[in-house]
Length: 352
Ligand SMILES: [Zn+2]
Image (cartoon, rainbow, N blue to C red; front, side, top):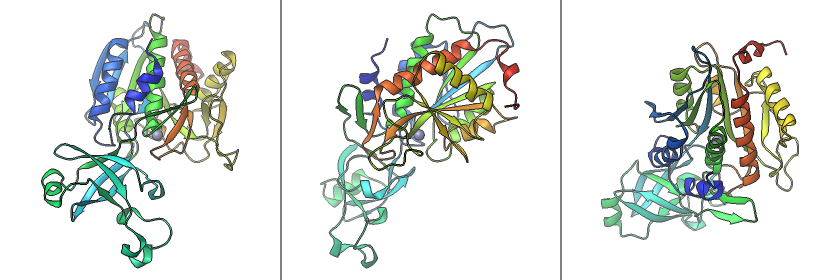
């Protein structure tokens, strides 16, 4: 069995900004290849891994999606050797000043996100949060060298090393959603040597943070009978409202709402209770905000389920997560996949 902690640390030490997932995809591919029968890359850059089931043909199929892309920055201009930036995915400018980054120019360059002193900022941004358009990346290089090495459109990714805190806690950037990639890897390992009737498609989707494009196109290409999406949710911290956040270390959340097929929700809930896997119910009144938005409405509609791992400080470079919750999410998804039989689809009605 892969030791998940070093594996996840390796996953969050690689770039893979939305639309530019190659470094992380290659790493996931290396981990999944020995666990499945077939691996391919979609036209949009998602990783598709198929573990063939033993059920009769035409065989039913389950798609499990974990997005592998991460939020980051892109160079929009160069002023006197300093880089101007825009965001890829949702980034809170309050957390950026002082961050260590890697500028992916002609070669990788270390850099720092800096905010100019107040008197050098535009008059309307001298107090409060310095907006992204007024932040800069300092590479420490001379303007001529920066001009030679960096172009508009180059990517800038977070570069803090992972930080182990306490027995089971990991901090770092891109844990949204590499934590779920690690959980799905654990699921695939659990399924080794077990009799699984359905085809299982493990997917590391591209571009979730910007367009959900990976999930739309992979779900359309594969046309599974059921989709499960694994992602992260807001974990509680002091002062956070209890009804909107979920405690870390107390298991994954099971999504419930119009984006979720009610019979799938019930199956997961019953299974978690039977296996005594701690979990919470997460109300998703509008939609899940995840790849399930895409899977649910692809083709004729694919019954979808959402499983989230609580994570503190989402979309910052210091996301914090519990390894216990990752293990639990992985186990629950594996047990669900193993439980699927030829009659399962009959119970997927809209009666509940
Ligand atoms: Zn996510």
